[in-house]
Image 1 (cartoon, rainbow, N blue to C red):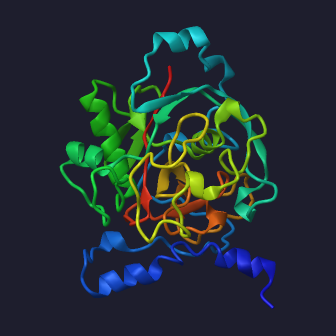
Image 2 (image 1 turned 135 degrees about the vertical axis):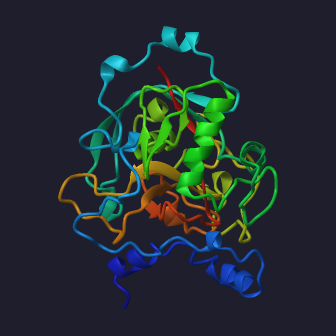
Length: 319
């Protein structure tokens, strides 16, 4: 009889449902690129996740217990918010304190701990292929369609997109390459990837959901998420499903989303579950089981690789 532990570890296999489809397409040469390789499928325990030598400090790597500075004095008032117009493609998220993690979740979702979040603006949807191609002059996606989320973008592609979008809008880019390392200027007003804590806070509807539910509002997963049971093995247009109460679409399903953080345990000494350095991904995708769609569920991907079930959304700090 398969134990519960084994079942949970099996559920960590990313793309289990869609893997056969992808292998078949690779075998017949349909866009057979390195970008199409699926993420490492199983989380394996390792005492201390290694830090990759190819990037430097990023927004997600500040703070003692979670990747957001504890800076209550820097939270904006409602009056300050009124002075800062929110672009149409972004949603304002009021700052606050929430309990990050899930005591009933996977090992890497524990322990539950309080995190203070500063206000920010985050993309209503995952970046679409139309948006990405217009700025980057490239579309690496496996599933093609202007309104579909861009996928097969590496973590570095996503960072570069953020910088270019900042420059286009006259904002100060967050990321800077120094030799073979990437550094982030937290004082910059440009676009960046959300930290893992910011992503979870937004997925759990910020201050609108005091209880911080594990899933978005509503019990019917199919109403707000494209996942293995209803996706037909492909991505879908952004914003077709019901948004959460902040007005954010596809925070569960469609494509996983890159975060800024290196994947690690929440506290020193707690086990990480990947053997190699990976960047955090959140939200589940078109080929995920229901258990992967929870807002506290953690996964990761090689930052130098792109995957057909992984995209991103942008964020701007609110100063």
